[in-house]
Image (cartoon, rainbow, N blue to C red):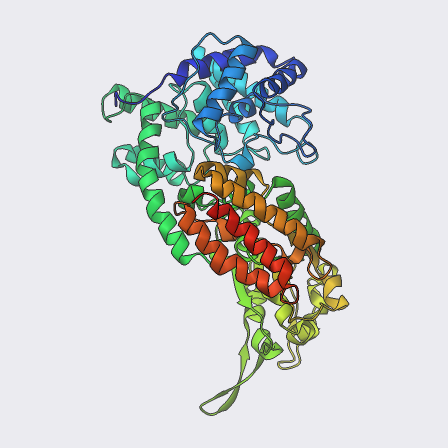
Length: 560
């Protein structure tokens, strides 16, 4: 593979060496990073909740330019770093084989209020141990590497991405095990069949000793010419090329079959290879900031029942299922059940009731009854019952006598069911996630009995999230950006309208597509999806709807 460009390696390794001296002087390091962004006229990414930077680790420094950016912006950041840190190596302009972080998970730590006190110190210790072990692979340094590795991988915000960090700083010694590489090594390329024997085909996260064993096995295969590659960089590059083709095929399947494109970020379709699913996996798929994710999970754990409410097109259904995955830490469909409420849905449909058969009537159990029974037999694992259109049903009628038992402090308490007279409870490991479209004028307000038993989280359009901004950058269409800015203005007017409000805003999913975005595509979305919605919103204010129709159309017509 002589055609790949690896000039980035020298710069990356020199920067890694340079950062070591800041282990005990992180205040100066933070000031340098701030100056880099100030001098190149770019906004520094969000590194803490309130955008302040209290501390930083060296892997996150690398993550600043190894994420979803245009190459020109990546090079601009590296030019700033070269000047600020006196790097002698040339700034690279090609990044063949470099794995990238998702924009929504570009730090190797959780924000200050969620992380442990020593998390960033541990990342620095591991960074230094990795560089020292690469220099001298003594038993003492190996043991230190393994000790530090095993400590940091237990931290929030660290998992497979730590192997990316190792690859960035020493790409000839440490292999990257992101989802693309794992898929390539264990599923696609038979030459690496020996790797599949370790940690069940890399579907379980390796400890430090196993990780070094993986690196050693592949290095030996390269030295013995058992594979066509000369180094880890070539493997990473080939994995990217081949997985990119697979991604295109899988994205087509996602677009055809997914239940909602809402908050979806389809840039990493190969993540489906992994049954492991955590916070990082969620933020990799969903246009949501980490704080909102943490809030939702915290509410579910405390209240046990939550309703995701919001405007059309913000991906409530898509998010609900992936919240469940992330809390289960795996994609286990057997522990998730989804139903949809409607006006005629009843207790007999949901819990149990008599239904006609050939000989008369029989008592049939409903989905919630069966799900609770199943969860009670597996009390150590969490189960998630998802209800779409929860406000379309008569909740107190549907839940019946179980309405009281879904409260968090009533879980496990038994009550006698009216049809079977059996003792029944809602177990504590069942979590209920409801979805509610706040823009449906045909539905009455929810009663207070329901509100007392559920937490409510407002899902908003994600146009201003880092993930969606990265999506726009990838689409690289100036007219599309103008259109989104106009929609953001439109949403502000909708939100300020006393007859509408935030629940009627235009969701970002209308503008999510894996297709090429051109004038024809944008025109179709505006004319056949957005404008009909506006006419319905302002059916009694034609002047206003006409004004916004014109504003939206002008964005497109200006470019013609």
